Image (cartoon, rainbow, N blue to C red; front, side, top):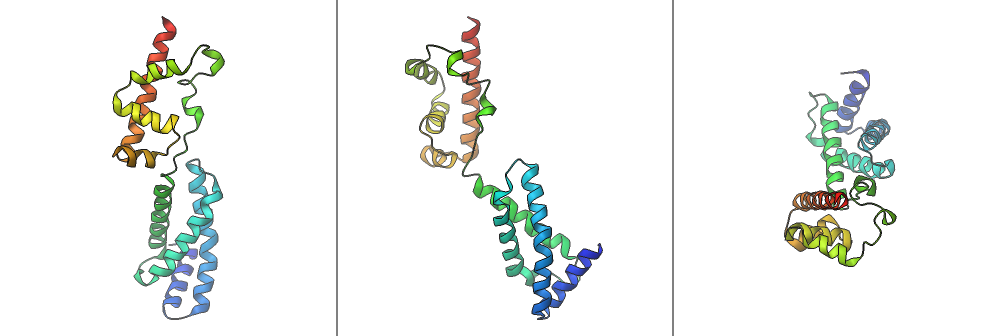
Length: 184
């Protein structure tokens, strides 16, 4: 345990003993450390840091609400970072309802219009008709109708994970078919 964690642990002990000033000081010290850790985590998985402050506030609120669960004989760090990790995961789960799929991920699969002249609604319908029904329904819901993964899951009675798997398989199958047509 480093000096910072010792100081934090003592601050929490004092706060639990009723010292409001110590508690305020503890929160002032925790906030920048949490902010830096959350921003690093957001950045490491490719998320913008814009939402990080919400997560920091959720962590601080959880620390406040759960401070009575910390055992004064234990180091504060593991308790704090467990709360931080859980709030980060909660945020990702909530965010997962709004899946943003960058078009770059499918650049090879979906060639630009000028590369495939003559593609029209009939071609699209013909290719969609070649897909298994579940893959076709998922692809149509998300790519054509603009529904989210969560909306599609609810509409089709699937889990969000199953929707993502079916979407990936549909794109892969279409890519294989389109590559096959190009060689003919």
